[in-house]
Length: 348
Image (cartoon, rainbow, N blue to C red; front, top):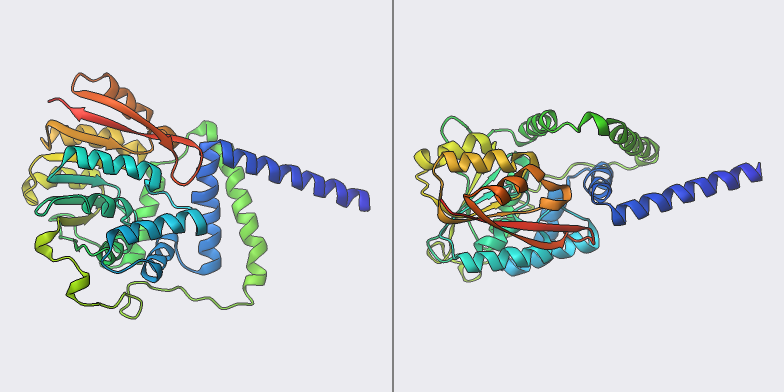
């Protein structure tokens, strides 16, 4: 019996060491471990979501009205508490440099998530500039709005005609996630690996479920008046006339992009930061071209072009005569896995 237990323990230890090694050295494993496995476990244990936990951390530790404090708080959360997929501190410095170099007055961000990159960009824009950020997930958008507000900026959520903002965040969030899962199924060659990973996740949840039933946990809603940061006076907030205008749109980028020019009175964008679904990088770039939203000199900055990667987008911008591209090597946010950003100047 002792020999069987020892053998089983040795096998489990080898398996654990193998998983740790893969997570530290392989981008796909790192993303799955942090952005799928651990996130679902913590959602299950805490009864909240990762965006909610980020917002609560910001409200607790970041100085209200201080954009840099909000950025630092999210970086601290992602490095010391729980990993999250935003542009991160190292690639964020590259984003800052591109914003300062471009000096844009019209900015489009594809993929808001919790508002980290929105705050990074907005704090560097001149008064009167306009930042439009698009997020498909209504729950993420609500969190981002509160994060942006805590940073001393105001994010308007205009109602786009023919694409209303959902009235129910929770149900609409489920619908958005279901739609996303239907459009981004893993390729057939990877189905077995994904099934094994899902089996590991749900086996762990099943093992945790019984002892966790001993504790009563209720979901927390960060959008209630009791949980929102209290107003501390106008001296701690930037006046609207002294900041850029941030507009947060909820919906699919493929639906919203064609409406920007006409229905929201959007001119051509000086800078486009691309950080949403990787399969949408190329279609949305071509859509921006077709809708006349790019001018000669417009800068496209795409995140995660290596991990998880968008090879069709890279092939397009690097080989098209309409673009002059440059790759900035870095690391996947808060990890030591290679990643980078692609800066592409539209030549017209």
